[in-house]
Length: 175
Image 1 (tube, helix red, strand yellow):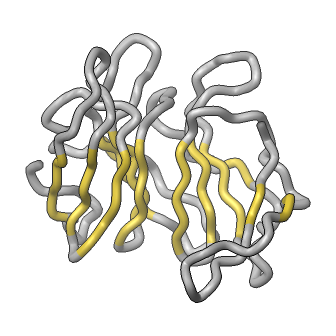
Image 2: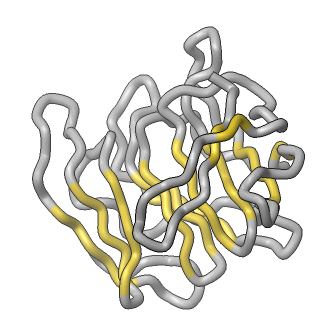
Image 3: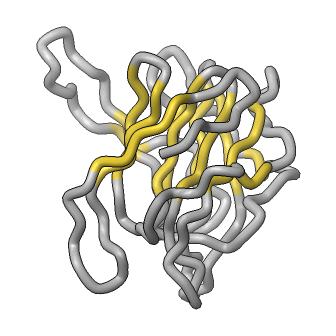
């Protein structure tokens, strides 16, 4: 799908009615990941409509009514074609962690500086990879740390939680 849906978050945690965004993604995507920061939304990697893994990063401004502006293709694509990875934003950086590149499940953690115009800087490979291969995990940030939870190692479902300190330069500490 390239369709983008959005709904208002209500004070009680429920969602309002869903609307179809006027600005669809520039291309079809499946098993991509997304994150938000500083009034922008990012959609990264995944498969295109013909089943080819992608390294593309799209971004769009979030409007006050919940819709997005026009999608842009980031000049700095992910360093690898990935799907089924997890992502977060924190402290002015966006992170892409784990996933599958078609040949291997990954431990790699990439990060890039978020620019004021919504684009990202060049992606850097973090010196501290995840401790084990991991795809289809989920991730959050809290209190200066990133947490990567669950997923699969390619053969079994995982229940492990990995965490690492987020450093001011965008890198992470040891997991």
